[in-house]
Image (cartoon, rainbow, N blue to C red):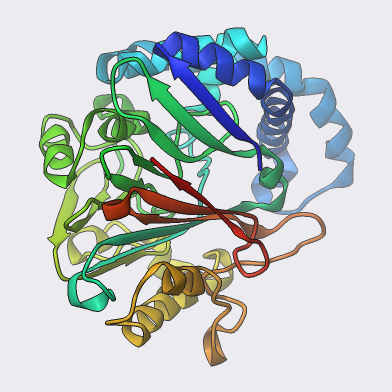
Length: 377
């Protein structure tokens, strides 16, 4: 997994990012536009795939892309009103990678456009459930297998703001999980089936949530910033850990639910956990095969956090990330290895943070058979 180190203003960092990831960004854009075009074909919508729609997909991709540009451009002023630095960052990426600005903007609004970048498991622990009482935060980033070629580690040092190290998909600043040099760690798993309706332009772009990493040094500051903003336009959960405590916020367009703890655990495996947000979660009406193992992952995460209560440290966090289940959760657990031809949902990378020591560990691939690399500020 490529590690990109960039410094400077948002635009300067973007240019360098684009230069270093030009190949990955251009390849990802081709893949995404082909995927979007294929998804618009009549057979895809019915779920009955027909081979004779594959060739037209290649011939109509450019037209689909041009049609999307007018929709994409509408998002610029919306994002600028909440996170102006991100626009400069994206303009820099487009210049560095030599691609259209609209293409980079598109990659950074995929969550709002219903293409979830991360089907993930996230968890945190603090207090008497950890070995030393200090907080830990973990996240396994799961996606289609093909996305592994686009996952990178981004290390940024802004002229003004916090330094950040975390994982992103090439061309985006949508961190899956990250920590800044003040010791604030965050993970942003999608609540895949949570819907609450409404026009998303009336809400905050998801990218604005990442301001907490750039601007805040602890959970209290992050929550103060959040209070000044409306709920995001897509349903996500946000896990936070600083040097003293942990927090979880579950968002829909209509409501959010905040939990803070100095003694306990939080977790999400693409499902809403709070009763307040569960009423919007459509997962309970779906067949289990359509849920990316959300039910067994949730069950197993609960079992593991109870099993290791009182002994959680960085090694135990890695064990949890590498778990393959037991009995009814066997091969449906936290470390995912699904294979459908060359695709299927798999764990692309695993992230473990220890904020008190400003340390984190990131695996390049499934944590069960790939070594973690240590990073620290």
